[in-house]
Figure 1: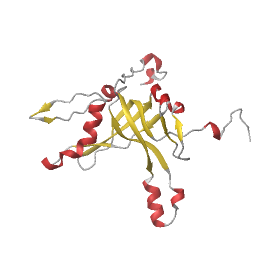
Figure 2 (figure 1 turned 135 degrees about the vertical axis):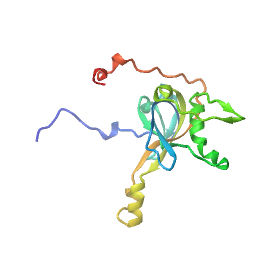
Figure 3 (figure 1 turned 30 degrees about the horizontal axis):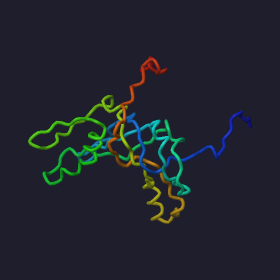
Figure 4 (figure 1 turned 120 degrees about the vertical axis):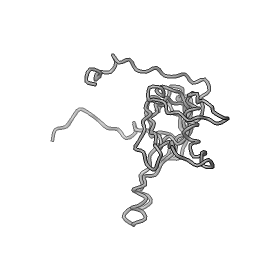
Length: 187
């Protein structure tokens, strides 16, 4: 076996904290449409300003500073855009509309109602939001717990962005310059 001059120290690894943190949207991609609904999946980069925040360590339950989270990325749960809703079901797009409004996307109004729009990934890039980070349980593991092939202790959990709020005073992050992309010529 060849040994490498690379080391791993478990004490260097700090989990994403749970709580509310400032972040910038770096990816806004639609998923596969299902039953007239499109899930939008976001990737967010934790902002420098998060270094001044505290959150809860999901492993120990202790409060910690978020300095180690600055620059790290976190994914969101799916934010659904329901395309065909009855008049009394329009509330089902609340999370989608709130995301756009909190990210500073102005939506037109028609007949006193907010008209939903679908911004491009470029239009969403770098927009500042406050993000609520929580733990999501792996649904496949829950099924295995029901079947008795896994215990509750073996269920995997992932920190994800569950909801968004307006980041008062947050500044939009600039798109990276194409010259910074070493793979730009291959696209």
